[in-house]
Image (cartoon, rainbow, N blue to C red; front, side, top):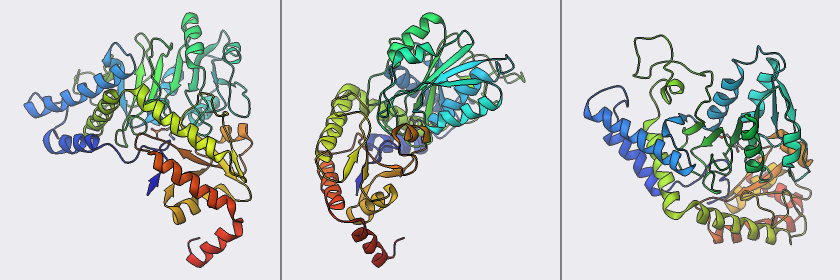
Length: 399
Ligand code: PMP
């Protein structure tokens, strides 16, 4: 099987990650931060090691500001609802966002809008290019937050995080960045890019297991809690502790997943994020170049040569995106994602809301042979009429 759905989750995971999860389950399965006995301390040390790995990767000075979450969605909800729920009663609270956001941002924003927060969505070109001047021009005196995805999970387009972040820092307005599609592929430094809140998915480019993510909260920024409960600290009080990470991490954490995340980051650090990213981007470039030559295939997203995440979105003339993905899976054993990719607004931007797109996404385990195989399969698919493939399915009775 050829796996080209790394924008959803990285697969397969590195051997080191599998081993770290297994070791955590078999050797340190006690609750961290709850007991003074050796096994519990070992579990606490596993969390600290992972927190330090996340902090190191993103230029974070104080690892206690790294909050472990279930995934990027949980981190984004904590950030968005944490900034606004305390402030929503303040009439006219406003925020700025892009038109490329995943539903992990768009849906909590819709909830905030129902609570009275005003949202400006900054326009962009059909390939998702968003001018930093337009983002900054949308900021008003009542703006409490700007939230931007670092890269579109549909089009691959990068947003101008550093330009916006550094200007916002001067104005004292926090920038929340969704790094789900860039962490592990592009170097990210919260200080150099002016990022106050960084939502991190542990199971994509960071190569960790599913069920782990993180939120970085800049020093001095206090959020309303999303979940309250036991932390193993200040247990006599009914108030959630003020100290991070305990303030935002209640209940027993996913210790095996968090240990696996540390192992994934260690693989990336050993190989170098810049080197891993350069390889993935070179593969995406080759894929786009070759697909552009195939009649009947239309590519979306920024033109080749423009920096973008290693995502190649396309349509095959005369075929529904779900059908193309189905043929790739059934006949060529290539796994890709079709449809709207949980980001309907990005499809509206690209003009593909009705049809969806086929998304090929490259990751750490992708090989050049995978790229060749995808090109050959798509050449064959586009070279035959849609009925040919549909007829085949009826025979195979797979629909
Ligand atoms: N944001 C973007 C841009 C994404 O692509 C995704 C995953 N599809 C998410 C957020 C959600 O990530 P997670 O699965 O870790 O919740």
